[in-house]
Length: 203
Image 1: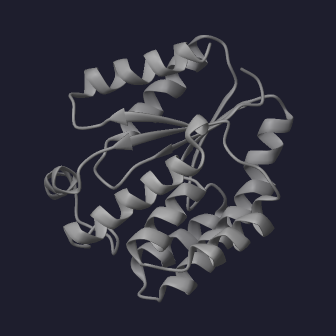
Image 2 (image 1 turned 90 degrees about the horizontal axis):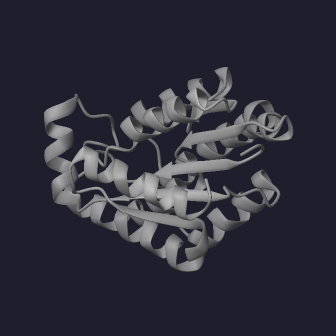
C-alpha cells in the first residue's frame, strides 16, 4: 500500500466525500499511514486560493491558473513528501476535475490545460482515480437538499452535463487509471462497488 496516490472525482453531489472518509478510516484501522487531502486546497496557500476560486468571479483561464498554482504548492508540500515517505494519499479531486470543470464545464482549451498539467505535475498522476459517476439532474437534487451553493454548485444542469462529459473524456484517454462507480445507487451499494473495485486490484 505504501506510496500510493488515489484521487476521488465526480460532479458536486455525487457523494465522493463520504466514501473517501470511510476508506481512509478503513485503511488506517488496518495499520496504513493515510494522508487525506483535497483540491483545491491541502496547504495554507492552496486553501486561500480555493476560497477565491469558489467565491470570486473570474474567467476560465484565471480559474485554471489559480487551480494549478494551488496544485503546485499542494504537490510540493503535501503529496510528493507523503508518497516519498511511503504513505497512501487519498485526494478529493485532482487534475481530472480541472479538465472536467474548466475544460468541459467552462469550455476552456484542453491543450492549454494539458500544458499546465505537464509543467505543474512533472509526470505525476494518481495510481487510481475513483470516478463517482452521476447524472447531472440527480446531482442537482442532492445539492439542493444539502447546502448553500458556491459559484460552481450554483451552475445549471447543462453545465454539469458538460462537466460529466469532461470526466468521461478523461476516462477514455486513460481507462486503466479509472474505477467508474454508479453513484446513483444507495450509499451502501456505492461503497460495495468501491470495495470490490479496490479488492480486484489487490488493494
